Image (cartoon, rainbow, N blue to C red; front, top):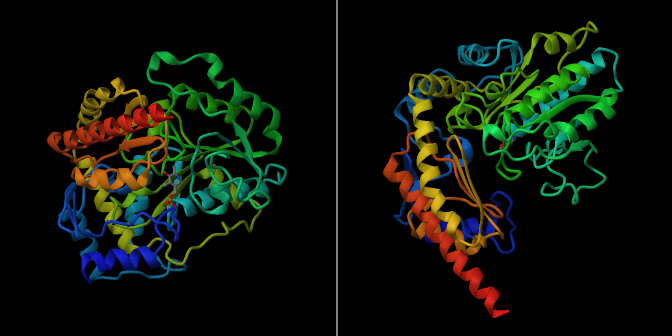
Length: 438
Ligand SMILES: *Cc1c(COP(=O)(O)O)cnc(C)c1O
């Protein structure tokens, strides 16, 4: 097929994330990708500002990761995990147990982030059932969160920008505290910042199985950064009221926020930790749910408690092998320095956007840079415009943001930040003209 035929068939027949079949924005066909560059079938080469949704930490087509997959491919691509095990799964479990907090000693491998979230919720519910505490069956979370698109995960996404309205009556009604106050600097903490959460857990703890939230950075719910002290106090309140703490590190894990895991910044341990996205270095789908001996053994404490989950592709050997290689590559690299210099450069270069009327806020955290606008962008216009400028950036709503692969070079990063400034300036001009036309 020619590129035009690819685009046309795709547009008519294939759903893309969160799109309609009626008036979709045509998708750009990718021919290949290398390092931080994506090459389109139509010839354009784009600098990647997305890491393909938080996944491709080391960039694309990495020789070490390719090698891990092909080597495993020569042995076995997949075997069922029921009754069988294999070296890649064991190696990955050991690696994850070694690099996460001391208390986390048991691993469940699931297929995707959303499924990992489902498993984490199931673990918490089954734990309390096995303790004879079936009244502890609700979840407490915070607004502006995002935990995935399957039904239990959706039920703890932000009720306003999530899909609660569309599925009223289907989604279980959980408890929502106010979103953690945004925090731009360590000095910003105020003791009252935890009050809303504290009130919720104090009033409802008897029926709460677990608190679930994204540590330090809320991602798809608005790319909001909050103070580590908030998380520290959430942990303390969970302990005080006998509630489990589930941390969803699917987006923040593996160095993105400046620490290997975001929860380290609060110096706490979760009861259940969900990892995904960058786990395989962006090669394929895999998630891991880690938990403590207390929870894992607690689920079995009524003598027959099995964890009632078992995806067909659980512990896929190809995915586990590439995850092992990706984590090794990360730990052996100078990722902290890279993430810090990406943050510094983004902060300096994106701050130019602050002079534009249309810009509400510019913020950075680790290798995440956000320009928040006062109104939502028109994707039909902005997406092709970024491609014209030679970058791959995928805004949503009012947010134009980048989270590039850690291996990005300063000149490539400047290309991203300059493209953002150019496009946001043009959007600013358009908004001014529209307003004066009224
Ligand atoms: C992306 C994401 C998920 C969902 O993961 P999928 O692999 O898309 O199912 C869940 N939680 C967070 C925080 C995420 O960023």
